[in-house]
Amino acid sequence: MIKGIGTDICDIRRIESILEKYGDRFKEKTFTAGEREYADAQANPAASYAKRFAAKEAVAKALAGSKTGSLSWQDVEVVKNRSGRPKIKLHGAAKTRAKSRLKKGQKYRVHISLSDDIPYAQAFAVFEAR
Image (cartoon, rainbow, N blue to C red; front, side, top):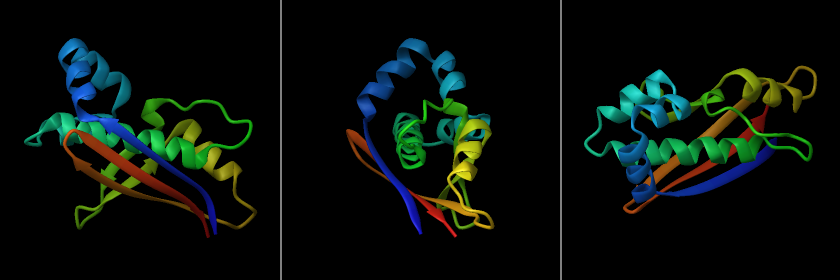
């Protein structure tokens, strides 16, 4: 059963500008160590960071309820599965929030789709209870 959906679009040029201005300070505040390692190894790190930024926003929207507050950037992590497809790993308050939206005996899954077409990056998230 779909419990929530979220989408976000991010201007890659904006992320480039933030990276130039704040560098590691922005990266460390917003992205996990694994996300930084992955993005920094890409041919266009700004596009990779923008997709992950959009993913965090989309997942937060998918998990949101009528009385939920904001999440820490570090609570939503984009990782890759064995085939290289992106998937979401929840930590801290995001994981707690996801579990609080389930009925007894249910488990959750967060589906994510990422894409970019310069100058934009987009993410679409689906929060599913099983």
